[in-house]
Image (cartoon, rainbow, N blue to C red; front, side):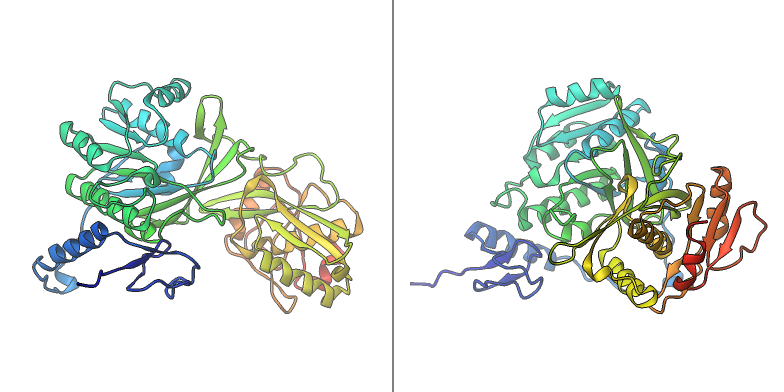
Length: 451
């Protein structure tokens, strides 16, 4: 009697093993390997067999390669077009992720209405809601268009049949984790299913030049749920950031084969949907007064300077001191606290320290270091900082305050919003109406912090 062949696959990274392993040797996840059925093993063999029959391509000199021209189409949203690099590219595959309730489906349904209003045939496929539920949201978003078609379906083959039946120019999948293919007998959302479905959607997008938007759920740590191969296969990966209870949302690009990932789209949740934020100035800080523990700074989100408020709470610890940050790197916070203890002799080792970036923004640049330190000192001494003063500077491990890029753009934004003073590490190269104080070391900041 022939021995039954078995194959185990990791649900996190797709690693395959002939025997079960408690820990995946590729990604390090525990209890992530599951046994594939005989149908799944047969499908994998057929896929490898068909791919081996494809002719071998030959390399050519890069000087002889013809540059490919991309055609872009406006989505009707200025902010989304900005993040995509000027509009959606025909034949592209775009993945949008974010926390539940952040506005993924709301945004894409509004975009679908915009595209349909421009004369495009758009298919919106939902595996989580019925057509009637989507219709209710479309009424609120004013997205009712004759060229917008709804399909409540979770079977990929049925979706492909619908696309064959009518000539659609845009496709929206909500969401990728709910779809399944008959050719891959496993649960929706598994590695094999997601990989198969994404490959079929990619083939469809490239062969028919149909831009496809895919909504992806995220895990507790903020990454797209399912295998990482999903992010590798698509052309563009966008993430929503922000507090679902706040009216402002940020759409940040983490991968874009057709443009830069530096730009960030800012949206505002209103009664009629998630729309471009026309006036977000002053939404990330208190314009009038600051309480003790708050400091202001200017960060660059793409090409746009944004004034934000850093909030700190320093309180005497009862037991083991806690360090926590929201919107700011926790490891960098630990470094700054150690620096303050060494350079300023502050006994922060016996205090709880909490940091929060107002408005739900996540800071990825070190230019806010000086503002974080100022907020900590303000909370520790229980003294308010001036609402007309901003703090700019990166802090090194030696306590040196270093210069930051795009300083003139930040200063112009401060002038526009009526700020009067700024503490920074070097003299500005251009003339400014802002009164500035230069502090090149952390030990010197105490001289200027409460001016």
